[in-house]
Image (cartoon, rainbow, N blue to C red; front, side, top):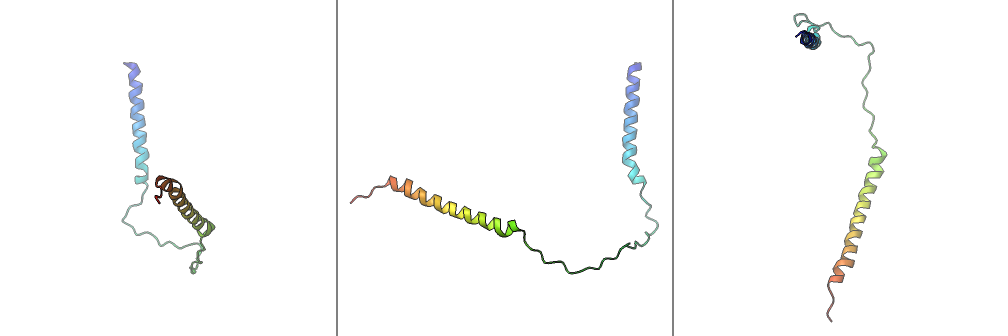
Length: 94
């Protein structure tokens, strides 16, 4: 029975540490009764118009090139399929 006693204490201590670790951030918050002080920025940054966004080179060149190559590949595949497979199935009777 003496061996089980330290395991229970360790379990209780680890549970208490977990509860305390989870409760500390909630306890550290300020009470809502007082109004917060006004925050003054250290550096004032003037807002300017955003710069014109230039598309990346991949968007400007790589994507259209891949789309064009895919279309060419599809057209070549269709033409070769009909010239090799379909044409060989049917014979002209004259």
